[in-house]
Image (cartoon, rainbow over all chains, first blue to last red):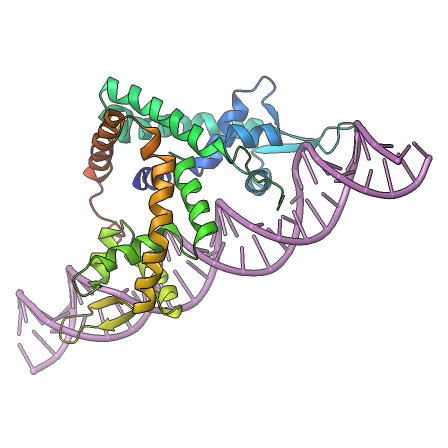
Length: 141
Length: 141
DNA sequence: CGCACGTTGTTGACGCATCAAGTTCGGCTG
DNA sequence: CAGCCGAACTTGATGCGTCAACAACGTGCG
Protein backbone atom coordinates (compact mmCIF):
# COMPACT_ATOMS: atom_id res chain seq x y z
CA UNK A 1 0.00 0.00 0.00
CA UNK A 2 2.88 2.28 0.75
CA UNK A 3 5.12 1.16 -2.08
CA UNK A 4 2.60 0.96 -4.91
CA UNK A 5 1.64 4.62 -5.26
CA UNK A 6 5.30 5.61 -5.01
CA UNK A 7 6.29 3.06 -7.63
CA UNK A 8 3.53 4.10 -9.99
CA UNK A 9 4.32 7.77 -9.61
CA UNK A 10 8.03 7.20 -10.16
CA UNK A 11 7.43 5.18 -13.28
CA UNK A 12 4.95 7.67 -14.74
CA UNK A 13 7.35 10.53 -14.34
CA UNK A 14 10.07 8.58 -16.05
CA UNK A 15 7.93 7.88 -19.10
CA UNK A 16 5.74 10.96 -19.37
CA UNK A 17 5.80 14.60 -18.30
CA UNK A 18 2.75 13.93 -16.11
CA UNK A 19 2.32 13.09 -12.45
CA UNK A 20 -0.10 10.34 -11.64
CA UNK A 21 -2.44 12.93 -10.20
CA UNK A 22 -2.08 15.26 -13.17
CA UNK A 23 -2.90 12.33 -15.39
CA UNK A 24 -6.02 11.65 -13.35
CA UNK A 25 -7.17 15.23 -13.72
CA UNK A 26 -6.66 15.33 -17.48
CA UNK A 27 -8.09 11.86 -17.86
CA UNK A 28 -11.30 12.68 -16.03
CA UNK A 29 -11.70 15.81 -18.11
CA UNK A 30 -11.12 13.90 -21.34
CA UNK A 31 -14.05 11.63 -20.57
CA UNK A 32 -16.43 14.53 -20.07
CA UNK A 33 -18.94 15.57 -22.78
CA UNK A 34 -17.36 18.95 -23.53
CA UNK A 35 -14.06 17.94 -21.94
CA UNK A 36 -15.23 20.36 -19.30
CA UNK A 37 -15.99 20.02 -15.62
CA UNK A 38 -16.57 22.29 -12.69
CA UNK A 39 -13.68 22.57 -10.24
CA UNK A 40 -15.49 21.17 -7.23
CA UNK A 41 -16.83 18.25 -9.24
CA UNK A 42 -13.36 17.58 -10.62
CA UNK A 43 -12.05 17.68 -7.07
CA UNK A 44 -14.41 15.01 -5.80
CA UNK A 45 -13.83 12.79 -8.83
CA UNK A 46 -10.08 12.87 -8.28
CA UNK A 47 -10.51 12.56 -4.49
CA UNK A 48 -8.52 15.72 -3.95
CA UNK A 49 -9.10 18.82 -1.89
CA UNK A 50 -10.23 21.88 -3.77
CA UNK A 51 -7.05 23.59 -2.70
CA UNK A 52 -4.80 20.93 -4.14
CA UNK A 53 -6.80 20.85 -7.35
CA UNK A 54 -6.60 24.60 -7.71
CA UNK A 55 -2.81 24.53 -7.49
CA UNK A 56 -2.46 21.67 -9.94
CA UNK A 57 -4.92 23.15 -12.41
CA UNK A 58 -3.02 26.41 -12.17
CA UNK A 59 0.18 24.65 -13.23
CA UNK A 60 -1.55 22.68 -15.98
CA UNK A 61 -3.03 25.93 -17.27
CA UNK A 62 0.42 27.48 -17.42
CA UNK A 63 1.48 24.48 -19.49
CA UNK A 64 -1.51 25.10 -21.77
CA UNK A 65 -3.00 21.68 -21.19
CA UNK A 66 -6.31 23.10 -20.00
CA UNK A 67 -8.13 26.39 -19.49
CA UNK A 68 -10.25 27.84 -16.75
CA UNK A 69 -13.36 29.94 -17.21
CA UNK A 70 -15.73 31.52 -14.74
CA UNK A 71 -19.37 30.63 -15.19
CA UNK A 72 -21.20 33.95 -15.15
CA UNK A 73 -24.26 34.30 -13.01
CA UNK A 74 -23.60 31.17 -10.99
CA UNK A 75 -21.89 32.08 -7.78
CA UNK A 76 -18.18 31.69 -7.96
CA UNK A 77 -18.32 28.63 -10.15
CA UNK A 78 -15.35 27.86 -12.38
CA UNK A 79 -14.99 25.20 -15.03
CA UNK A 80 -11.85 23.64 -16.42
CA UNK A 81 -11.69 22.62 -20.07
CA UNK A 82 -9.13 20.38 -21.70
CA UNK A 83 -7.28 21.97 -24.63
CA UNK A 84 -6.31 20.12 -27.81
CA UNK A 85 -2.74 19.92 -26.54
CA UNK A 86 -3.99 18.58 -23.23
CA UNK A 87 -6.05 15.94 -24.98
CA UNK A 88 -3.07 14.82 -27.05
CA UNK A 89 -0.99 14.66 -23.88
CA UNK A 90 -3.44 12.34 -22.10
CA UNK A 91 -3.85 10.15 -25.14
CA UNK A 92 -0.09 9.85 -25.45
CA UNK A 93 0.35 9.07 -21.77
CA UNK A 94 -2.53 6.65 -21.38
CA UNK A 95 -0.91 3.45 -22.68
CA UNK A 96 2.02 3.82 -20.34
CA UNK A 97 -0.19 4.46 -17.34
CA UNK A 98 -2.39 1.50 -18.12
CA UNK A 99 0.61 -0.73 -18.68
CA UNK A 100 2.13 0.28 -15.36
CA UNK A 101 -1.04 -0.46 -13.43
CA UNK A 102 -1.38 -3.80 -15.16
CA UNK A 103 2.23 -4.74 -14.55
CA UNK A 104 2.31 -3.79 -10.88
CA UNK A 105 -1.22 -4.74 -9.90
CA UNK A 106 -3.71 -6.32 -12.25
CA UNK A 107 -1.48 -8.88 -13.90
CA UNK A 108 0.02 -10.20 -10.68
CA UNK A 109 -3.37 -10.98 -9.14
CA UNK A 110 -5.77 -13.85 -9.58
CA UNK A 111 -9.24 -12.79 -10.70
CA UNK A 112 -10.73 -13.59 -7.31
CA UNK A 113 -8.01 -11.59 -5.60
CA UNK A 114 -8.87 -8.62 -7.76
CA UNK A 115 -12.54 -9.02 -6.91
CA UNK A 116 -11.74 -9.13 -3.22
CA UNK A 117 -9.52 -6.09 -3.53
CA UNK A 118 -12.41 -4.25 -5.07
CA UNK A 119 -14.63 -5.09 -2.11
CA UNK A 120 -11.87 -4.09 0.28
CA UNK A 121 -11.55 -0.73 -1.39
CA UNK A 122 -15.24 -0.05 -1.05
CA UNK A 123 -15.28 -1.09 2.61
CA UNK A 124 -12.23 1.00 3.49
CA UNK A 125 -13.58 4.05 1.70
CA UNK A 126 -16.80 3.70 3.63
CA UNK A 127 -14.92 3.46 6.91
CA UNK A 128 -12.85 6.53 6.14
CA UNK A 129 -15.80 8.65 5.07
CA UNK A 130 -18.09 7.51 7.85
CA UNK A 131 -17.29 10.28 10.28
CA UNK A 132 -15.44 12.55 7.92
CA UNK A 133 -17.60 12.71 4.78
CA UNK A 134 -16.05 15.93 3.53
CA UNK A 135 -12.69 16.81 2.09
CA UNK A 136 -11.28 20.23 2.89
CA UNK A 137 -13.94 20.97 5.47
CA UNK A 138 -14.51 24.41 6.93
CA UNK A 139 -13.37 24.70 10.51
CA UNK A 140 -16.50 24.09 12.53
CA UNK A 141 -14.91 23.79 15.95
CA UNK B 1 -5.28 2.83 -1.95
CA UNK B 2 -5.04 6.52 -2.52
CA UNK B 3 -7.30 7.59 0.30
CA UNK B 4 -6.10 5.30 3.06
CA UNK B 5 -2.54 6.57 3.55
CA UNK B 6 -3.81 10.14 3.42
CA UNK B 7 -6.54 9.40 5.93
CA UNK B 8 -4.16 7.62 8.30
CA UNK B 9 -1.60 10.38 8.08
CA UNK B 10 -4.19 13.08 8.68
CA UNK B 11 -5.60 11.33 11.69
CA UNK B 12 -2.20 10.64 13.22
CA UNK B 13 -1.20 14.27 12.97
CA UNK B 14 -4.40 15.32 14.67
CA UNK B 15 -3.85 13.04 17.63
CA UNK B 16 -0.08 12.96 18.01
CA UNK B 17 2.89 15.16 17.11
CA UNK B 18 4.14 12.36 14.84
CA UNK B 19 3.82 11.66 11.15
CA UNK B 20 2.98 8.14 10.16
CA UNK B 21 6.49 7.77 8.80
CA UNK B 22 8.09 9.29 11.88
CA UNK B 23 6.11 6.84 13.95
CA UNK B 24 7.42 3.98 11.84
CA UNK B 25 11.00 5.10 12.35
CA UNK B 26 10.67 5.43 16.10
CA UNK B 27 8.66 2.24 16.31
CA UNK B 28 11.24 0.17 14.46
CA UNK B 29 13.96 1.57 16.68
CA UNK B 30 11.97 0.82 19.83
CA UNK B 31 11.83 -2.85 18.90
CA UNK B 32 15.59 -3.11 18.50
CA UNK B 33 17.80 -4.67 21.20
CA UNK B 34 19.63 -1.48 22.14
CA UNK B 35 16.94 0.71 20.55
CA UNK B 36 19.66 1.25 18.02
CA UNK B 37 19.94 0.58 14.31
CA UNK B 38 22.21 1.53 11.46
CA UNK B 39 20.85 4.15 9.09
CA UNK B 40 20.83 1.96 6.01
CA UNK B 41 19.15 -0.88 7.85
CA UNK B 42 16.57 1.52 9.25
CA UNK B 43 16.00 2.78 5.72
CA UNK B 44 15.22 -0.64 4.31
CA UNK B 45 12.99 -1.56 7.24
CA UNK B 46 10.90 1.57 6.75
CA UNK B 47 11.00 1.19 2.93
CA UNK B 48 12.46 4.64 2.57
CA UNK B 49 15.39 6.04 0.65
CA UNK B 50 18.49 6.79 2.65
CA UNK B 51 18.08 10.42 1.73
CA UNK B 52 14.58 10.68 3.08
CA UNK B 53 15.56 8.86 6.24
CA UNK B 54 18.49 11.18 6.79
CA UNK B 55 16.25 14.24 6.61
CA UNK B 56 13.64 12.78 8.93
CA UNK B 57 16.21 11.53 11.42
CA UNK B 58 17.77 14.97 11.35
CA UNK B 59 14.47 16.53 12.38
CA UNK B 60 13.77 13.88 15.01
CA UNK B 61 17.23 14.47 16.41
CA UNK B 62 16.51 18.20 16.71
CA UNK B 63 13.40 17.26 18.66
CA UNK B 64 15.56 15.08 20.91
CA UNK B 65 13.63 11.90 20.14
CA UNK B 66 16.74 10.06 18.98
CA UNK B 67 20.48 10.49 18.60
CA UNK B 68 22.98 9.71 15.89
CA UNK B 69 26.46 8.34 16.43
CA UNK B 70 29.19 7.41 13.99
CA UNK B 71 30.57 3.94 14.33
CA UNK B 72 34.37 4.35 14.40
CA UNK B 73 36.46 2.13 12.20
CA UNK B 74 33.58 0.96 10.04
CA UNK B 75 33.39 3.02 6.93
CA UNK B 76 30.93 5.82 7.18
CA UNK B 77 28.49 3.86 9.24
CA UNK B 78 26.06 5.75 11.47
CA UNK B 79 23.60 4.39 13.98
CA UNK B 80 20.48 6.01 15.35
CA UNK B 81 19.44 5.41 18.95
CA UNK B 82 16.09 6.14 20.53
CA UNK B 83 16.26 8.45 23.55
CA UNK B 84 14.10 8.06 26.64
CA UNK B 85 11.91 10.91 25.43
CA UNK B 86 11.64 9.24 22.05
CA UNK B 87 10.61 5.98 23.64
CA UNK B 88 7.93 7.68 25.70
CA UNK B 89 6.68 9.41 22.57
CA UNK B 90 6.23 6.15 20.64
CA UNK B 91 4.60 4.43 23.57
CA UNK B 92 2.19 7.32 23.93
CA UNK B 93 1.40 7.39 20.22
CA UNK B 94 1.08 3.66 19.69
CA UNK B 95 -2.49 3.10 20.88
CA UNK B 96 -3.82 5.83 18.60
CA UNK B 97 -1.96 4.46 15.60
CA UNK B 98 -3.15 0.95 16.20
CA UNK B 99 -6.71 2.14 16.72
CA UNK B 100 -6.67 4.09 13.48
CA UNK B 101 -5.41 1.15 11.46
CA UNK B 102 -8.02 -1.10 13.01
CA UNK B 103 -10.82 1.35 12.44
CA UNK B 104 -9.99 2.11 8.83
CA UNK B 105 -8.74 -1.30 7.72
CA UNK B 106 -8.69 -4.32 9.96
CA UNK B 107 -12.10 -4.01 11.52
CA UNK B 108 -13.97 -3.40 8.28
CA UNK B 109 -12.64 -6.56 6.65
CA UNK B 110 -13.65 -10.19 6.90
CA UNK B 111 -10.81 -12.48 8.00
CA UNK B 112 -10.54 -14.02 4.54
CA UNK B 113 -10.40 -10.56 2.97
CA UNK B 114 -7.54 -9.68 5.25
CA UNK B 115 -5.74 -12.87 4.30
CA UNK B 116 -6.21 -12.13 0.61
CA UNK B 117 -5.00 -8.58 1.11
CA UNK B 118 -1.85 -9.99 2.64
CA UNK B 119 -1.21 -12.17 -0.40
CA UNK B 120 -1.93 -9.21 -2.68
CA UNK B 121 0.63 -7.12 -0.86
CA UNK B 122 3.29 -9.75 -1.25
CA UNK B 123 2.53 -10.22 -4.95
CA UNK B 124 2.54 -6.49 -5.67
CA UNK B 125 5.77 -5.96 -3.78
CA UNK B 126 7.37 -8.71 -5.80
CA UNK B 127 6.16 -7.15 -9.04
CA UNK B 128 7.51 -3.75 -8.10
CA UNK B 129 10.91 -5.03 -7.01
CA UNK B 130 11.33 -7.44 -9.88
CA UNK B 131 13.19 -5.11 -12.18
CA UNK B 132 13.98 -2.41 -9.67
CA UNK B 133 15.34 -4.22 -6.62
CA UNK B 134 17.11 -1.16 -5.23
CA UNK B 135 15.89 2.04 -3.66
CA UNK B 136 17.91 5.21 -4.23
CA UNK B 137 20.14 3.66 -6.90
CA UNK B 138 23.28 5.32 -8.24
CA UNK B 139 22.91 6.64 -11.76
CA UNK B 140 24.43 3.94 -13.92
CA UNK B 141 23.39 5.34 -17.30
C1' DC C 1 52.12 2.26 -1.29
C1' DG C 2 48.93 5.08 -3.74
C1' DC C 3 44.90 5.85 -5.70
C1' DA C 4 40.51 4.66 -7.79
C1' DC C 5 36.24 2.77 -6.53
C1' DG C 6 32.26 1.19 -3.92
C1' DT C 7 29.67 1.96 0.31
C1' DT C 8 27.32 4.81 3.36
C1' DG C 9 25.43 9.14 4.60
C1' DT C 10 24.51 14.08 4.27
C1' DT C 11 23.16 18.46 2.12
C1' DG C 12 20.71 22.00 -0.83
C1' DA C 13 17.58 23.14 -4.26
C1' DC C 14 13.31 22.52 -5.98
C1' DG C 15 8.52 20.85 -6.48
C1' DC C 16 4.32 19.49 -4.57
C1' DA C 17 0.69 19.06 -0.63
C1' DT C 18 -1.47 21.09 3.13
C1' DC C 19 -3.35 24.50 6.01
C1' DA C 20 -5.25 28.78 7.04
C1' DA C 21 -6.74 33.02 5.42
C1' DG C 22 -8.71 35.76 1.96
C1' DT C 23 -11.97 36.67 -2.02
C1' DT C 24 -16.17 36.65 -4.68
C1' DC C 25 -20.34 35.45 -5.48
C1' DG C 26 -25.63 34.22 -4.51
C1' DG C 27 -29.31 33.70 -1.28
C1' DC C 28 -31.78 34.30 2.85
C1' DT C 29 -33.51 36.87 6.69
C1' DG C 30 -35.03 40.44 9.25
C1' DC D 1 -33.18 46.10 0.69
C1' DA D 2 -29.21 45.68 3.65
C1' DG D 3 -26.41 42.88 5.84
C1' DC D 4 -24.91 38.31 6.82
C1' DC D 5 -23.84 33.66 5.78
C1' DG D 6 -22.38 29.89 3.19
C1' DA D 7 -20.57 27.98 -1.13
C1' DA D 8 -16.84 27.83 -4.34
C1' DC D 9 -12.36 29.03 -5.23
C1' DT D 10 -7.69 31.11 -4.83
C1' DT D 11 -3.48 32.37 -2.65
C1' DG D 12 0.73 32.36 0.36
C1' DA D 13 3.45 30.29 3.80
C1' DT D 14 5.33 26.29 5.49
C1' DG D 15 6.98 21.58 5.57
C1' DC D 16 8.15 17.23 3.58
C1' DG D 17 10.06 14.20 -0.37
C1' DT D 18 13.12 13.68 -4.20
C1' DC D 19 16.99 14.23 -6.91
C1' DA D 20 21.62 15.21 -7.74
C1' DA D 21 25.83 16.45 -5.92
C1' DC D 22 29.03 15.99 -2.47
C1' DA D 23 31.63 14.03 1.55
C1' DA D 24 33.91 10.48 4.31
C1' DC D 25 35.60 6.17 4.86
C1' DG D 26 37.41 1.30 3.78
C1' DT D 27 39.53 -1.79 0.23
C1' DG D 28 41.64 -3.89 -3.33
C1' DC D 29 44.38 -3.48 -7.54
C1' DG D 30 48.27 -2.17 -9.96
